[in-house]
Length: 144
Picture (cartoon, rainbow, N blue to C red):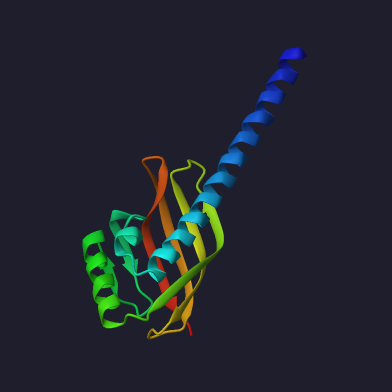
């Protein structure tokens, strides 16, 4: 009976640790998103791109798409040069971590200032890379 109780206790402890990891990962992704917003506000492309994987796929709110960190970086540079007042803010409403802790799904709303759109909804796919989370794909839909 003692072994059974020990196994049950161990099982609860493991579930507790797993739930704690999920909460930590969710909080980390939220903080990375806020740091990404700050980098956009500062027009700091080097900092912005530090959150991306090299093979990032981006579908923009105007339905165009780009693939690869270099192409996306070049497009941001052009945008900031052409429109120095542009600002985008993404606000997560839900973050879900995969059961194997290697992928995460973020969804939320985005707001734009001095842009072609006022904002809409977005989703992002995050991938664990070298003990942190990086963005693998983002989809933005202009709704306003």
